Length: 185
Image 1 (cartoon, rainbow, N blue to C red):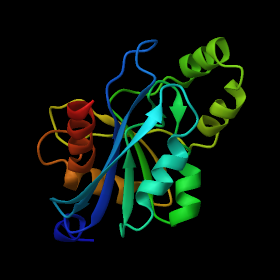
Image 2 (cartoon, helix red, strand yellow):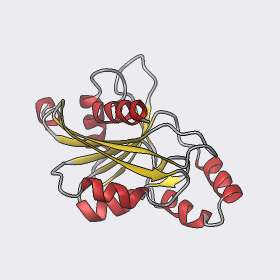
Image 3 (cartoon, rainbow, N blue to C red):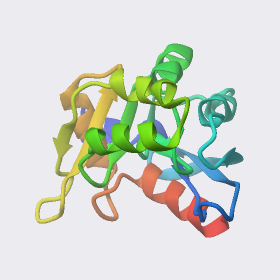
Image 4 (cartoon, helix red, strand yellow):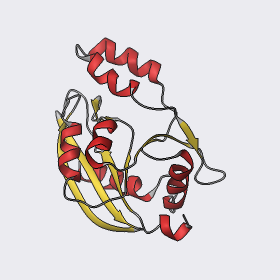
């Protein structure tokens, strides 16, 4: 696939808004649909801090949109409200890229889940279904990103991330979703 082909794809970025644990019970989740490097649409929803409603809310947001891939800013949103990427992949049959700015520490995640949630096994089950973490360096001289991939080959996902990282190391759909979610919450 050529550079132009990747920059013409319809890609969704999903990120959560700000919240203060114990003070705010809900926060925003923003989904931004990019058509190439242009914003086509934005949808917002509210999710519970440490709830279990994020996957369902994202399915509702994505329904009706035509897209070729989804980029999630991790799987934990609003604390430990987990989005299950396998549910999104089964429902929409499109590649799902879970992108983190820092290397995931699943050992620490499991410890925190066990310590704070009675239903920790349900939440941890999502992490267990994920594939290996891939290191991606969209821009030379910048810190890498870390990515887990469902429904696409590693090289394809790396190329998509690199080609959409035009204003820094984070791909535009995620960068803008973060600005929207954090700016409005």
